[in-house]
Image (cartoon, rainbow over all chains, first blue to last red):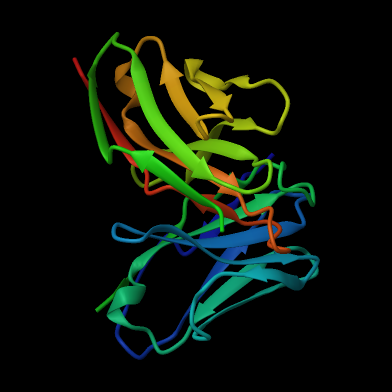
Amino acid sequence: KAGVTQTPRYLIKTRGQQVTLSCSPISGHRSVSWYQQTPGQGLQFLFEYFSETQRNKGNFPGRFSGRQFSNSRSEMNVSTLELGDSALYLCASRQRDLNTGELFFGEGSRLTVL
Amino acid sequence: AQSVTQLGSHVSVSEGALVLLRCNYSSSVPPYLFWYVQYPNQGLQLLLKYTSAATLVKGINGFEAEFKKSETSFHLTKPSAHMSDAAEYFCAVSGLMEGSQGNLIFGKGTKLSVKP
């Protein structure tokens, strides 16, 4: 069974640009969550989607957005990039609609903003 | 609000020695607790989870953790460290409050080094 797949793995952007990251969850998983990981702030929750609906959102500005498609694949978008957006962006999927359900993480997309 | 505190951002042990990584949580409701491991340039992998069943939880790679409600702790241990255990470890609590389903609240992480 394939794991969570994130693309691209690495990317470099400049300030003011926008970026779109993609996540394909494990087959059968309907919940997809996104996290930002930085050395200073650690792992911070961005948002979660379940059945194409955003169910929960972390404390990030509106420049960060996401969506989920009918096949459970998800994308997140960051507009007007800032230097501080440089981070590892992790996607995770969950099989069941419960907090006890294990989160399966992808390897992440490492974004560098110059 | 729920929170997780991991004591010690870096822990160094010798190969074969006991590994003890500390985690304390704050939660006004019964928590679900998790330990994840992250190897360089990889995502997070679940080591073990506590979901209100047995207080002593056994995970993969010989790790275990004990839930102690009185101490609000969920420390991770392994009797004998192996070089391959060198990684960063994260403790997390589920956001089971105020309708915040689905998200985990992570500690800052502890980097474990294993000396030969």
